[in-house]
Image 1 (spheres, one colour):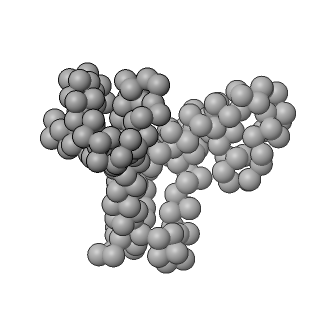
Image 2 (cartoon, rainbow, N blue to C red):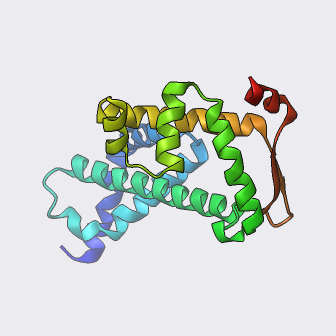
Length: 191
């Protein structure tokens, strides 16, 4: 079939499934404007690939595959855009002055001490002593998955405690100028 003929066949094929494809897209892309843009992009993709239409056994499946791929591309692009925006907001690790890094690291050990013992012990061994999770499991007489779980939960609890108990001062470029434990948490450390 000549290219002009196959491309003329795209409109009726697409229109036959447009309502179903629209519902499919709207279930996966919440923003109505984005979903409508996606449908326009789909039509263009189908039009650009119209030569394949003559070899397609199941037109509906072919259209849904193109739609799925377009949705995946949409989320990949948004994910990249989000991660680029977030990365742009965060300072590089090398941007932290050595003194500030040491201050922040000095806060970690006392905060770990504030955690319940079942999380503090494994976390201290893992993060401060650099011991592998398998070795921690052996030392504590618990399963490997139990050690991993305790370390992960300990990290979550430490993060929450860090956000609650630490005062950080940042420079305009985002680097840490000063770090200290808040007075409200110092009383917890002495108990």
